[in-house]
Length: 253
Image: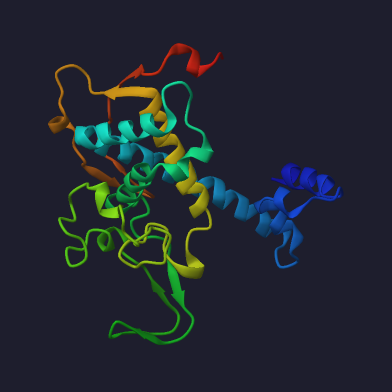
């Protein structure tokens, strides 16, 4: 971290426009953070942004394998918008409505940070009729919120269409689904995570044919979970992946 910060400080001696700044630039530009705090914030981002994103992508692939009709619909959208003569680009993501719905539904049903991060009440308050004393650690069950039968119809069913033509989003403004928590205390890496998830799932589904080993069907794919730092699949997932597009689209190594 020291070398990264030192190199950035040298680079920042040359004027930059606001559009060229990144998260580290913003941290270094404020006097509120010490060098150690900047180091820890960078470590938080790298630590929290690896397993959480990759685990969510795995859950998305699992659900697509369990629902071939949804996989087919997503591939059709990708083919219609992207075609088969090039790979998905970041600029395409806003035009892929069903892809975004698949990502949101995955986050609703499989929030990898099931209990979010601990909150701390600095003063006594009342929430939904419950008294919360000052200096109390509070945990939110994000997993249960996304599966609440009072809010979601058939909550255990993987159905991306519930997010089509719906104002409900996953960015912390709608309390029906809070994979990144909400308001000021929501995940600082939310936008990066949503971009990484959508882009990776789009690349995999568009560029590859993903199937199960011979003899297995979608009914054989389980969703048994293992709770650790993140909620992951308990059993290994074995897949067959083949090229789906013309060879020249992939470029050369």
